[in-house]
Length: 105
Ligand code: FES
Image 1 (cartoon, rainbow, N blue to C red):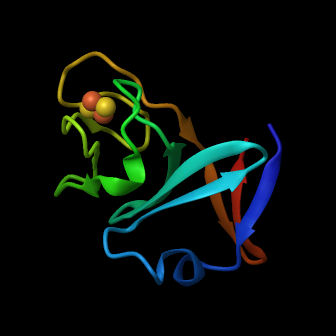
Image 2 (tube, rainbow, N blue to C red; image 1 turned 90 degrees about the vertical axis):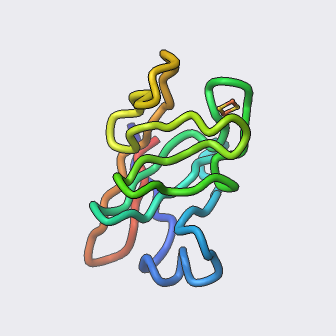
Image 3 (tube, rainbow, N blue to C red; image 1 turned 30 degrees about the horizontal axis):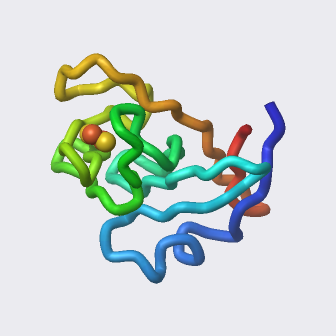
């Protein structure tokens, strides 16, 4: 795994979003970043069910990311499909360091 710097701060990443989700491209991968009450997390930009664009979804009250197409829910820390359909959303580690925000690919 290689760490890639993606921004200086969360403010830089999320200042233009209303749903605390943003999609970035890093090292040839499209990653959805999730800013919820527990921290900053990264997951695959497309839903494992039928390819919904996760950045167009939302974060529910428990901090799950919810796909906009069929509203399947995923635990953003482990990728587990918490609404029970049996899918798995790939996650990427994020580190917030003094020198900026990094994602591991
Ligand atoms: S494409 Fe995401 S729930 Fe169906």
